[in-house]
Length: 124
Image (cartoon, rainbow, N blue to C red; front, side):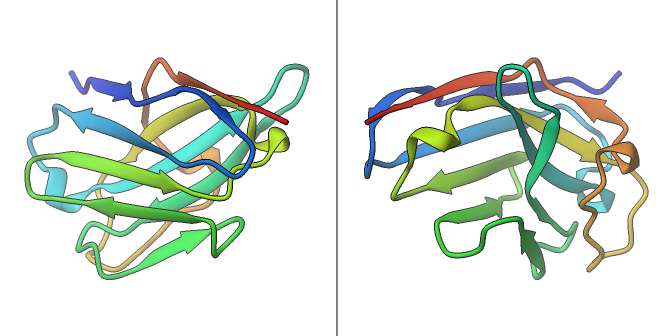
């Protein structure tokens, strides 16, 4: 069974930075697309970023402020800078299994497993 554990959420003032981490317990991590999504109160879950199994390719909803990365220790990170109050949401890590090395996925329906989420609150 795949388990994902997010950490690093918290409260920050506008303009600040946070780094979220997601530890994945998967056997074939090198074949998995990893993604970050977020859900604000009363809104749908939105795509934030995804990284290919190889780590060579990434895609973003809002390029420039966020950076996704992964390492061989089955950890995926989302570095967030210049945070805005509208970034306030619960952030979820997700795994999309059985991907080719440089593929990425932006649709939540393409992901197979989800973490419990970590709250990010940005105050003005």
